[in-house]
Length: 81
Image (tube, rainbow, N blue to C red; front, side, top):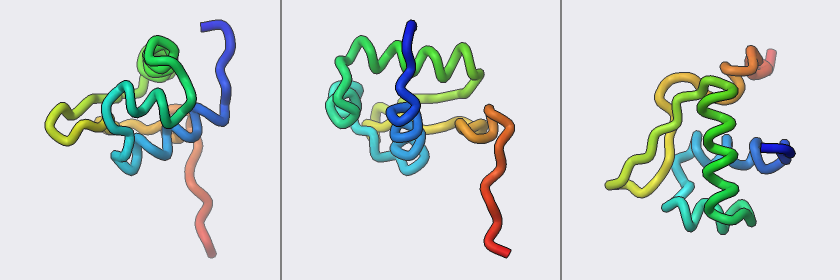
């Protein structure tokens, strides 16, 4: 993949965390990507960043299996102290 749109990656992360991606075709449409480019983004997340992303065919959604984007990048959410 030559270029990665960080906004799309962050949107993907949000949708995957909330299990609201839909099928690959629906997910690509929500991100305004083609299906093949969606799979390139998923490959980047899986293989380059080491994030386990699974597809649940019964719920028709992608989800994380442990590590999410922020954990893979070594980031932690801010606390509201």
